[in-house]
Length: 409
Image (cartoon, rainbow, N blue to C red; front, top):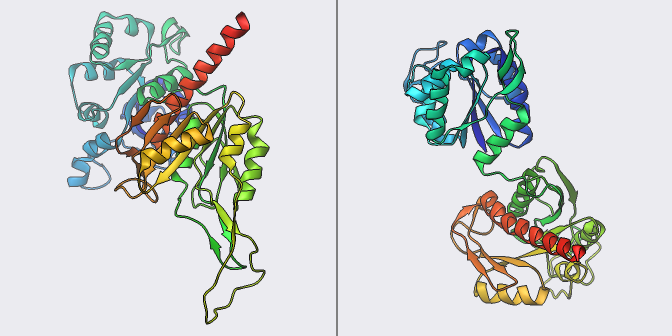
């Protein structure tokens, strides 16, 4: 997720430095835009060092002649952000936003973006309570702008009253809400499997599959964003571990089997997104198999059915399985749903354009135990992950509700 953070010229501008860090902890990419007045309180270099990005300070760059890139940069930023956050927002900037004035990069960006806008005012108490400011704030609210009201307390000017920048947690919460990020899994431990497993044929060759692990990693990332403690059991993939996720690397199906069972007791949700090998060679060759003149026959045996074993031990856990198919997707998914006794099967046709392996998007249908089916359009894998977790969260709420009512009886 990407946001633009507008920093305006008030004493509270220094708090925007810590706000950047808090937003980054939520896996939000921050592009800072500063007004000229803001630079009197905090230097652009501070924000550049924190974000690793250029800090935008002018509508047209002062360090080089204006060109087409600088002329439309506000449009480019407007199109790539998921939200515009202005914190602190002075009375002057609030007035400009309300009246549609666009005389610098930040106010021009405000008019150019269609993303949600969050404003956190900070100013003297008399300025905050002035009729003009009240009217401007009301105009913004009526347009759908989220206004995080300032706190009351001792102000930098020496007065006491409303006007102090709201707490950073309140601002972050407003941003997450605007971005559609929920914190509904904070009491859960989510165990996710991802990626392929490998089964050795000899000392240099092995059997595996085309799974990139992206869907499983998206689920781990999304669950962590929603507050869960996440344990990710991963096959061999070339992906970075999502922030806040505990990762356990495995290679073979048996290693994944052992890792899942070792972490099962603490899990309240288990999502089996890995593409596990169903068979392995009975006797892998100790060295390197040499080419011969005839055919080569290798005997295989079934690997552990991890999903079925977890299902037998599931207790009150929510259990989600995956089915990557090439034909008769619904039929195979429904059969797996019944045979494995899971709460949901997430199925897809890996031959469909934009779905399956090596894509950042996916097209899935969610099959529920009670017979309900949800066909999702082509979405990014992180969007698919959140849709799956919406269902998981609802199942957990239902289970906890039933448990509470039974205990009360």
